[in-house]
Image 1 (cartoon, rainbow, N blue to C red):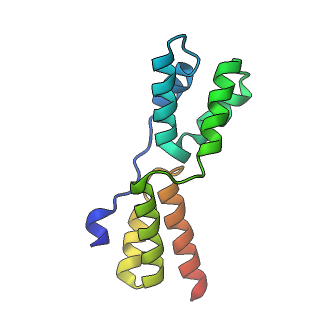
Image 2: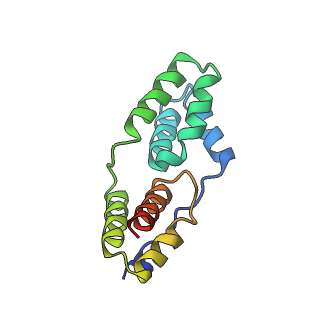
Length: 130
């Protein structure tokens, strides 16, 4: 069941992240809001690019938006993300070879994705139990 429903995270193109971060400084409110929503939806995959943008001395508007997004990153609001994290927890508790195979497949996703990190952590905990 998990094998069919869980897919590894896809990586967000760095150019797309830079474009969205630049849009946070747009004079158009709708463009700024859309960029903020998309960056928030990308979650932890956007974090390295956002932190880099903060070091590049952004405008006050851009800085506030970036800080708001970074503050919201660690709160799971998406039902889909929550389902995936719970599935990883269940797979870890099952711990059989089939569950471990699904976790290994999830580790092949985008390196900065929360799902990828959680699957890696689960596999490490399983390895330490043995």
